[in-house]
Length: 214
Image (cartoon, rainbow, N blue to C red; front, top):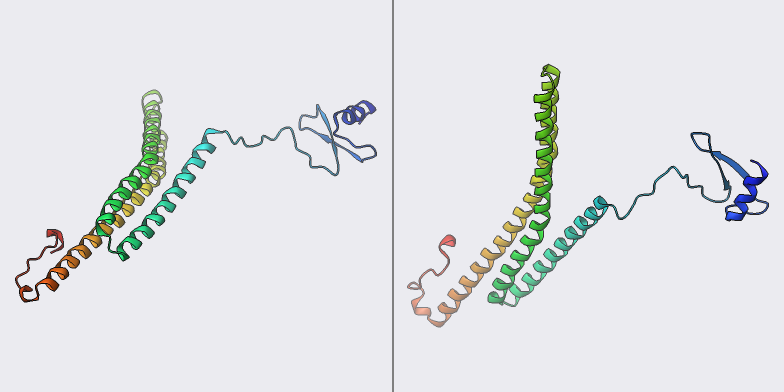
């Protein structure tokens, strides 16, 4: 390293007086980079990840939505248990219905984007296969490549499509169980109240449970 390189490094603040100097050459060998031995050297050829990248933003939004749904579902279960303990059944029915709507919409919004992305992938694969079939002479190798592309697309798309839908089905089933449980408790509480008011007519009391629960 010559005297001009050291002086320019001192002017730019990258070198300290009396600090040992080492030479670092780039792969092409056309540029000499000076660095302090006691400092971390960041190569100009490495690119730092950009936090404003669309994929990074979409990933953060997806994580936030999952956290929001989980927290909201836990709070909803706690509220439902408290209301059931205090026997506020009408309020429970309204809140349960409201929670079902919100959770379904919160989960369906990411699924809409997901289905659009899946359709986009399917269209891309379809056009790739069409181009291969119509513009390239078909042989055994090309046909095997087409089948491999189809297999890869199916293996990739099945988890993307079905995993969130399974989550939606589980959430809906849980809330339906809450509905049935609440209606069942309400019907039995009404029956027990009527039995207490008229103990002589217990055998004549009709079954007031919903038809699905009889």
